[in-house]
Length: 251
Length: 280
Picture 1 (tube, each protein chain N blue to C red):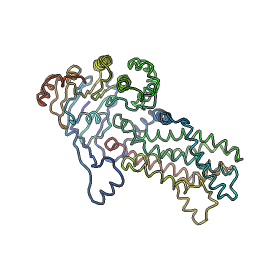
Picture 2 (spheres, rainbow over the protein chains, first blue to last red):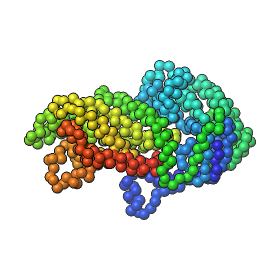
Picture 3 (cartoon, helix red, strand yellow):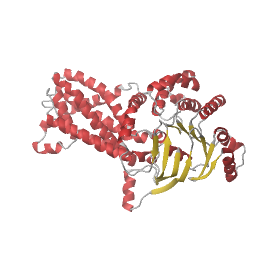
Picture 4 (spheres, each protein chain N blue to C red):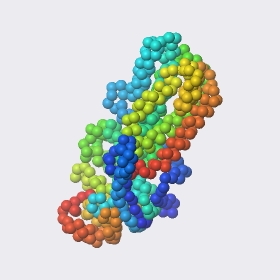
């Protein structure tokens, strides 16, 4: 996977919801309510096959934008992204889920939303439900779930999608202590297989444990790229938090 | 994992161009089951907490037909009080409801699919496609109900009813084109969906649903024929109520509108769909 001189700009309109009225008013005043936010500025890097790249940086550094661009969701403004293989994204949990449907139906729906065939999902169905371990709740509508249970099912679907290149955004571990342990083990298993993984995380300990490479973004530019230990050291020195318990907490 | 066979994907900046059509349509075709499944699941979820559930979708146009029947059939009456007028009304109203549903669901399909669009890459046309699939799934029971009234109203039954699937197919293509246009439009102007009911209302009155073409003054007929739904409803009447094959002129005109809308709507949608993730 190669990213060359990638820039992404968001043109955000000033009003929250674009309506015809505000467009007409704007036209009348001859102004354009466009604010440009440069999320990524000339980012270049390369990830070898099978590497696990940890992406770190403060909020708003452009980490999620980077992942969305690599997945082909956001169009780049300049530069070029080359990706070899099927990209699967774990950017948020429970994408495609519908709260009015049962857990069972949502497993199928979520899997199909991620691009799997129905037969694929059915083949993996038992594995997924065993991993989520929700018991009788599987047949109840998901709006009756606690947020922890919702997260467990969503995570179970997400990690069983069998991706070629996996893009993972932060805050993926949910649920109670027991489930957390299980999901960490699953993550390690995914990283150990010969897959290319991009892992966005604020959990520096996680990145150091799992990643073979580390990319540090700051306000849309690359501040450092190298082995995790030294990049994380530079990063923590930069933000001046020190490697205390807060920064080392989980994903 | 074999790297040699994996295709290389390149993402580069684009201008307002149609994405490469071949791969796009292949991916759309590969994902068609998702569109249908999503349609079915959305319908199921929508009727989750009403007592009559999906029955309402048929009941709604049926009750509406009752209202119009009282108004036009009995109060303004004249010669069209019989049960045959009810079946005339139903044929038109059910067909119009098909377009109404496709348009309404299609218009909100992109905007309400925000999480899906922000977090997964797929041909965005899947969402309006799924909306039209929903509308079609709702239309099928309506056709069944119409069948009963067709018999009660003593409308002609014969081999010409074999035209019905073709007309429904043309209607579906027509609706898909329309759904694509409005799905993209709603991304730019969110109030599209609030002014849609009024557009649909006036469109209903301008279409030969409540009135027949023969009732209208001769000189305004060319104007009425501008209505894109006009040829479709015309052919629909010929097949269901006159018991004959649709005239080739009307059929061709209807097919032309459908294909034109699909191409135009598809172009409008596809040239803009890569912007949706930024706009939502």
